[in-house]
Image: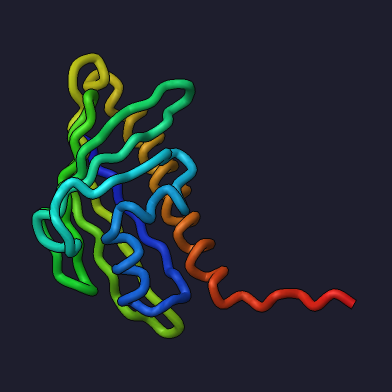
Length: 152
């Protein structure tokens, strides 16, 4: 099993960051690798919510299923994610900090088949992907209040 963790500060309120992340249908807006996401379970989003998403990795498309195994708005979101090549279990936490939210991620990644032999590579690539995804979220949310330049 491989472990991937990190954190980022997003200059937006905790509730806004949590709610954006908790609805997986938002992820294609900040994760360029996610093509689409749909909710499989009834509304509202909460404990037990299930989503199906289509990812693009290099030239291939991959389907995944995400289920929320912990949902404590606005502080903690736990999930399991299943792909053909690996399973992911983990948690996101959201803590208020001056000016925004510190979001932390902690994932246990269990590669299957031949991918098991490449666990160190999975960790390196996964860590880079996670940083890029959450940086995209930060850019999306912080742009909401960004001043527009006045042309003159």
